[in-house]
Length: 77
Image 1 (cartoon, helix red, strand yellow):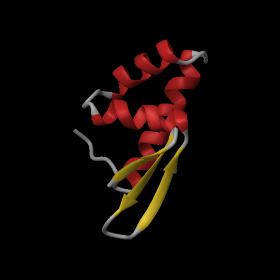
Image 2 (tube, one colour):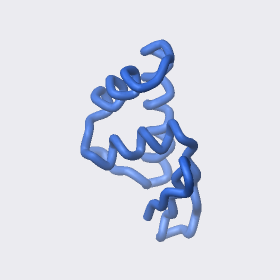
Image 3 (cartoon, one colour):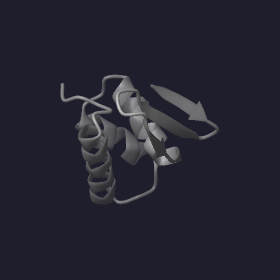
Image 4 (spheres, rainbow, N blue to C red):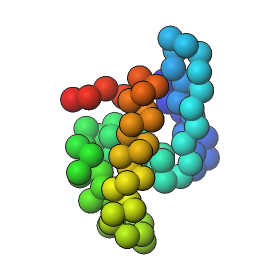
């Protein structure tokens, strides 16, 4: 379950009752993942929307994806 709170998103793992918060950038990644975009496409979209080096964006997106996967908030397609 996910809810937007201002520019941030709060995710709730219903099985464990654990909350996970995403800042504005994490929220954008979440939105793109919810649209069904692959991680490569998420990285490309983030690079076009945010001013940061592409390798830094890729590293940050992959780290967030690993965290979400580890917490079972997303699944591998």
